[in-house]
Image 1: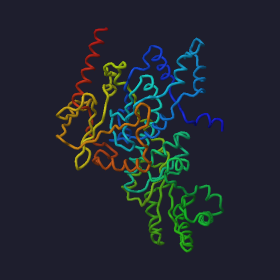
Image 2: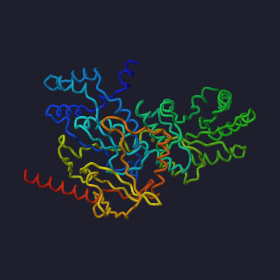
Image 3: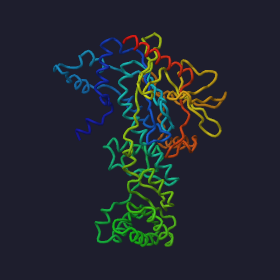
Image 4: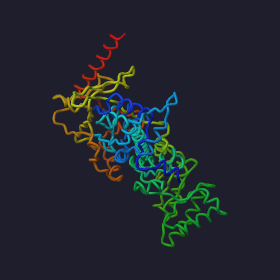
Length: 493
């Protein structure tokens, strides 16, 4: 219990990398802690070789920031850290500064459940340089994982073509926090429920579950096990039928289903967890229908993901719902979304903004300067294009969106096209300004957002690339900054 009390507490100020604190110490020491800075959090490519990503995790960000405070215990711990000479890394003046620090950041964010694209800022953090720097690690930790899982869930749910997807991954999740965050993100991504009871309580997610093979094996026969379960839980009867022989298990489930019906209950479903799911589900459906159990669901499991589910639906598998675990909550084949958090503008108090670019040999890793916003253009058919623009430069009269990685790829937007700016105020000067919507509302936003986009963008394999890029004036500014960096480097050499 002591470990739990130490780890799970209102403030998680030390949930960071040491180098964030060493930089913070440096900013304080050289008198730049109160310089004003702007950072953006974004990702560079879609996960799973897909064509879209679902933004997720903002509610955690809000909870983190509104409870953020360095405690006396935190300060005492930091004071014990030493450098390679055995002396303290942090001096007492800096530790006192941290202990008295009140966070005054402005945070703008794209709402959870929004479909987003590479290079678009999911968060814009503005305020004192030291404070904004300290947000890097925790915000990345939160947004990276939950956006990854929400996207995986959305892909799986689309593959299921209307069949319910249930998240059953807690036992294979990456620890307690990974399990809870994954259950939440999976529900936002479209899953209909979870086996994770604590997630159900904390996040108001429907919980689902029946029994395991051990229940069957604890009785002399499969029939006896089904009968006992029906007697103790007649209103939650989904029978796992593949402990011994699957089709015999279906027959036993039918026998018990008839007894349930006589007593005024219905067998909710059967579950298949192994074998040829296409063949077994079709055969099971025949036996259930012949016995009059037309509404009894067939739930399938067994290391499913979007590609296996897609294959099974193409084989006309008679599966009503899908129990997806390991490959969802661990984001199988894509361990991280790869979000980054980069400085894009800085100024002394009362001074002019200096727009910053991080240049790289890899064009994808060259950052965009400015104080950015994302505008989505829509017509009656749905989303047309997204434009990243600088809020001070504004939008040119002719709206031309340029792909920064391929300037020959651009899109011109007709005048007066309907649009929406995606980044909304969440905190202003450290005070929360946006309410946290219910998880059901966020999930509905995901569904509504996906309807905006053409199926070619949402498909699992070789998706079409949605038009998203920089406003022309911002693109030209970025190129000018890159050119000046190159010229400076040449002079230095």
